[in-house]
Image 1 (spheres, helix red, strand yellow):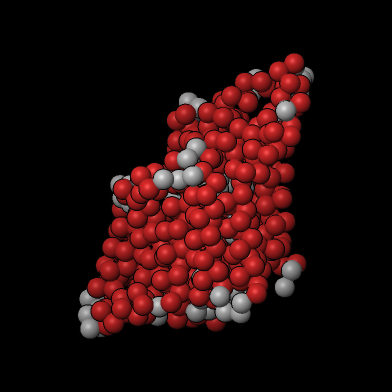
Image 2 (cartoon, rainbow, N blue to C red):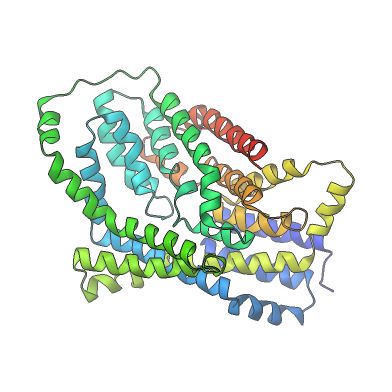
Length: 416
């Protein structure tokens, strides 16, 4: 027996988790330390070493953790080689519409899964927004919202990879369910963000840019190719080889191919290649992936799902309500989609079968909660950059959240 009852141990651990996140402690450290604290409080001490060992040597844990490391390395190489700048600038020149460019640039930056990444796209959005005379709060909203439209259907999203692995479902089956949600998310963002915004007439400079279309398209294809190759290989391996996706090998091997592609395209030397390896961020995110598995294992070992089974059996709470509300609250509290998902799956997995249907709802609930969390770094950085209050951003973000969240629930009910 542990030192505390399971419910009390969870409360203490979650409060500790909240404090760690409030103090901006790295998510990797936070998840791992919280897992160990919960294990110490709720489990027999002799269980803990065996639980840690089984989690660590599990093929799925190893594959996903290494794949996360590879994705972070790929994203950092994009930054170091300035290929991400080439990608965004070529896209801006191809599309001769400031509104569309303002939507796409943050989404393109979304290919770099870095904390507070909206700060990278903020100057680009600000530059385009000046052509439309947009207010600071609308610029901030567009930058925040469209930064996060790509992730629910991005096969290399570490959270998407995690939810697929934890629910033992394929990534593509979850993505298919989330495509309509992302479409509504983008439409809502466009309508709300650009409502009453005047159109801009094309000037000579824009016409000249348009004449360079072939060169711009070539630049875009070259800059985007490592990501595209990685996605194609991941989907191809997951489809062609049975069982690869269940243990995460499809994404892991695809990431290796993607890294090789960016090395060849950008002629990356040894010094540039090892530069990202000298920064803490790549290891912090990697340890967060491992911490998500460890915390999930500990939560399962506590048997907390039995408490939720009793609640559901009594008929006092609907299962769908739990699937929607619990991940959303955890996403808001942790200001992390990864944290929301990694906590929700072991809690809810004991009361309902984890399929692509339920996994998608858990993902979207945790994800949308994270997007509008007041401690979400992208939200905080964006508000600071555009010098506007969170309240002004929420004026646009909350209606968008409600519409998108309602769509996720509708898809859950309509598509079995």
